[in-house]
Length: 437
Ligand code: GLU
Ligand code: MG
Image 1 (cartoon, rainbow, N blue to C red):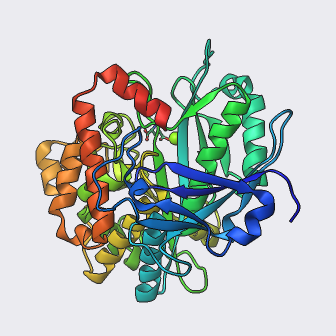
Image 2: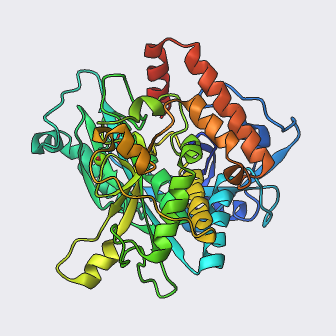
Image 3: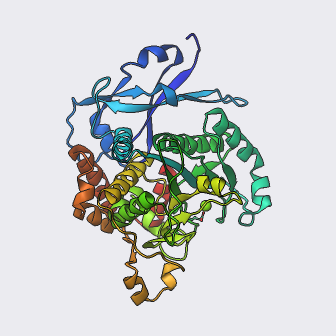
């Protein structure tokens, strides 16, 4: 109660950025009920210093109301004070939902899936990022040298994540020069999105404390390896059993999970506008980069947008627990809440309509003949933000998932970003996104 210091009230917005207002820690308890005010128009912020056209006037407000369960602390380190934070829901008033709140969008999608199917969505993000500093030295891909070089940072990162209640599954160097990765642990899907937000912010903070900069931009420069934010998910029944696998089909998927994946594939082009929502996202996506360029599913296929990952164990029960699906066409310019929300909605749509699963890609889809791709229903993913936005606008099913004010302000922001990209020199464009994310 009498603690000194600040606690930051955090909320994630439509461009996947964490915004904040701070209050003295000693006032935290009294902020729990009705939070702090925030102009609704703020939800139309682009990643830069620009507010996109939006439906809200100068007097319209929401409250940023802390979800006390999400409170976390980054411990003090040398001359850095401890950092306290809590994630908020944006609400017109306590207990009232706001259609443009991304956390609300995610929560209601998961709740509808549960209400109609009895299934819980479990998810985990894999977050790739680029470390940078003046005179930054890099080592070979995946090498112990690359880990050892950043051992102080990586050790602090693991400690900070664990102290914040989001202990990672793995922390390691990736393929790119200066590229590293955190794999989050599987959690109930809303918590998984919270964990993604916290993990990204802690990575940035750990980097700051070590004289580094962490960027999650999907393509930090044209020459760097892309940063994905692969989203793993599984479906659990009311006993908590993983029912994602266990089917007789060629992909080993359970019956409901197959329909769930079919729903995602059916709406994939539109979903891309949500999961890969920036102009630079489309410099990352494409064949032969393991980032995915084709709308298809495959067992362990890193070139497929939807990758089926059977669990690995000698023991069939343990293997069944690990069975999961990975969505590779996602990056950190996406709101983790919107991304999880649309996956839940698309999956539910597949279940409702009992959509059939198309045949799997058994090799790199880029290596298949055009005729073979056509036969398997494998198509190229949208190759620009404009194309993905067109797909989103053209998909009436997906459109219906969004309250009007959320959809319209999202489109307004994204149209602005697409135009900004056209009128900006590539070097500056990459730099702006690299700094913003
Ligand atoms: N960096 C790749 C991407 O952009 C993913 C590499 C991997 O982890 O398989 O998605
Ligand atoms: Mg990776």
